[in-house]
Picture 1: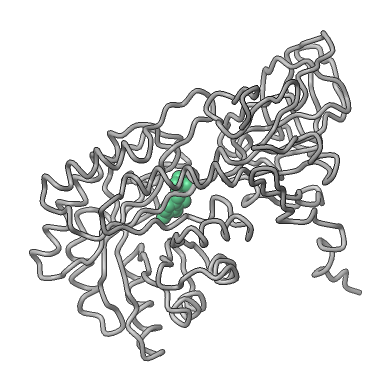
Picture 2: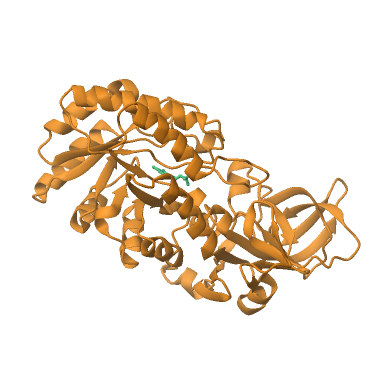
Length: 428
Ligand SMILES: *Cc1c(COP(=O)(O)O)cnc(C)c1O
């Protein structure tokens, strides 16, 4: 980034060069002109810097960083992490196929999720993945059966539910008693004894994942104590655990949020891990959002502005099918004009998409100086946007560009209507 560029707060790779918003050294205006809108643009450097913070936190440790690819599973993004030596946390057979397509090391793949099918288990066993993170006692039985039938022993970890409150949105908190995820803390020893007795399984570790967009260290500290207590209890019952997988969930700055840095958080966690005598274990983590969230922006064009009786609407060409987080979790994304030129007519707007749902909004009560034809950048759009995108209203999914310095690479062509109709049969 050159001297005269002013980075946006919390977004060091997005800056204004004079009036124009840039991702690294590429102008968003130029990229939108070339590729159209809505357009996702990602900074490779932001991702590598986010990864480096974790790597600093794990320096000198036996650790594996498995990128939780559901946050953004585009091949061009996966390739960045595969080339950086990451493992991957997958949640479906489809994700397995994607990550194998970019040459990921199967031994560094872990398979999470509450509803793995037998076919997905067979697919993952055939690929030789590193670990199945099992989420129920019935799943242990099925996995053992499937593995034994294939003449294999499946490497397993059991996801335990530490029952700590991550203090985040209820839809993205996963480690509390009422959640569908994991096995209850007080059944864990029993579940491990059962796993160790099954012919098709080989117990390799323990895991947890307490939620997402966590902005404080304390839920992690609480979960850590509970997981380490369990490691002691499980090993006392005669089942050895090779690795401890601490999940993902670290938050990012969407709107002045101040999550701990990954390296600080892990220094703090390791102080406790060392004090309890577990410092030489193998650790796995599964970060998703914190590796990609602020790497991405979505560029969208203003189609119309419309004064309303109660409020003004700014109607843009991106919608809830491209940016589902506001509709799903009332999530906040900052919205910045791509050009700071302005028209001298700033107003308070609700920024909304063209989809026929009142839930189709992208930002509420935003002061913007815009006219039809202007471009807006929706920030913090790297995680849980494109990977959740849909075709609702028969809208084509957006194109994606990966920026590295002064180079921009198209990593996903804009979908076409032919792509959408390909598998449909109108019948007689
Ligand atoms: C979604 C998920 C993650 C990643 O969560 P982030 O909040 O994106 O870091 C990690 N592990 C599991 C099991 C998950 O379901």
